[in-house]
Amino acid sequence: MNHYSTDTRNALQAKEYAQWISFAPFIFQASRILRDSGILEAIRKSGKGGVTLEAVAEKTELSIYGARVLMEAGLGIGLILVNEGKYKLTNVGVVMLVDTLTRVNMDFTNDICYEGLKDLQKSIKTGKPEGLHVLGNWNTIYEGLSILPEPARTSWFNFDHFYSDSAFEEALDKVLQEKPYRLLDIGGNTGKWATACVTKDPNTHVTIFDLPVQAAVARKNVISQGLENRISFHEADILKEDAEFPGNFDGIWMSQFLDCFSDEQIVSILTRCSKAVTHEGYVYVLETFWDRQRFEASAFCLQMTSLYFTTMANGNSQMYDSKVFLKLLEQSGLSVVEISDNIGISHSLIKCKKVK
Image (cartoon, rainbow, N blue to C red; front, side, top):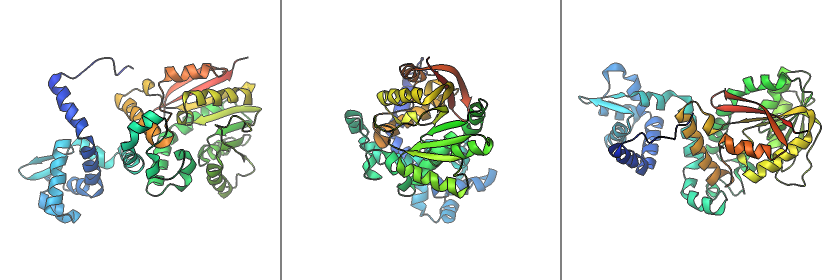
């Protein structure tokens, strides 16, 4: 669905919305503090009768001034209502407080991206993650995932797993229906998908292909579950063209992996995938494409996440428009067999074969 073909705001609405953009950092931080300070929870627990400013300040151990400026901001933001001195939550306020998607997105934005986004313009110019320095001294964030400082590490993995985990079961069934004996899991991360795969199908062996620092984390998890005989490891930097690339696989799996690379890098990786899979095997790509979303809010989340890749992750990747991505796939010696949309929260599963 095309959410972006028509301008839906008149001149007055456009000017109002422009002010929301102008004050966006204030809106974000005030909303986060209203959530984390306990103000929203205190208002919610007050029930239909509402609660006074003074009572909220006492329950949250904030000064009257601190509670007042935050709650007045909450009125303008649309999180709170006030009538005759009694405050209540709006529907948006309830969502801000209890919705997991919103919490995961907000924590990711605050703990991973917020400070570094000041370097977005520089990143656009250089093609490098110029904001990453606020988290660590790495060329890309992937080099430091397992050693990110807290709370950034928890927020990153919560964000990654929230989106991917919702799609795993359905996608796993589609992969295993072809009964692959040898699977290559590229970008295996913590090993979560690999362990689910071999647990569900006793005849499948998975090789996790990842950077050494990430493979170490996955190996620890695999050993803790007693699956080291079913899951092996191939440690290398996939971006190095001369890196050894294992072959003769019945299936190759990549989940939220290729969005971590530039157009040229994607073509390089997929070209090597086409050589590593058998003629009877399949390459599976699980990704979130902003143009294939049912809801505009989903597309918006993905478009904003692209800016994380620009300024924090590697400086040259994004959440792709599927039309762009499919052209890259065609350049790689692979042909699309099937595309399954609406898997999990926002994913599409592309099933490919090598062109014979």
